[in-house]
Image (cartoon, rainbow, N blue to C red; front, top):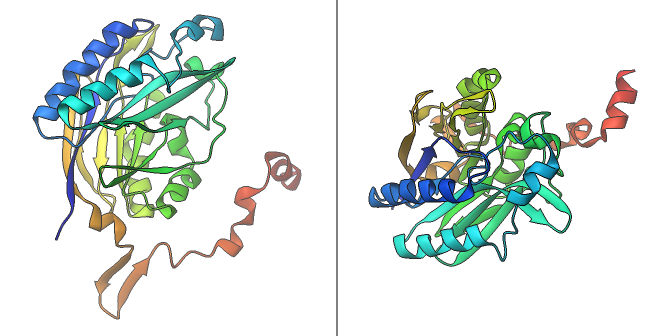
Length: 287
């Protein structure tokens, strides 16, 4: 019997430094998605705060802890009311450190959180601390979810790690500027196909401090095909009903006894040592 879940990606505009306004807008869109039957609803990177801060000092007042945390608790109460699960982007405060993070919450509270590991030289990522935790997979009512954030999607090792740990779906909250158009058009499909998982990117729209954001949120199937995508201008919610057995079956039989592949069993990790060498070692070998 197929095990299916309806998922939703909410492509919205975000106001920098206006948390309450952003939270109220997220609630409005969450209620719409829940009314449509979404089991999981995903919002963009830094959906709560905005992204284009000019310094850590400017961004720090908008960061907050996750557990306990005001916004996570607010979302938890909505999830209890609506019977759904949510992933949203946040600036996380932990002592004197600030992280670009996303949080998975459900009716039972905070299920998991992720700190962005790969930081580009752009927006608030120029000032926050890099993520300090391994890639993980969490269960949201039976749907196994891995989380990355924006630039993390450029590093295939991240998605592969979560796929090996059993992810059915990898979600990528993003803030893509125009230079990421090629990434939006091609890489999401590749990450889905190479890991045989569902993959959902959720970008924002609008303009913040002179930087435009391109939308183009997308949900891809385990074979790499695009299921649905948003346009590049408007706020929009995209939906798909996914069958997790497609992601869990890694042995793909195209022609029995003639053409069969398994992207996990066919791996040869004994040849991949260079992938985990420190940066300094890689530079030394190049020289």
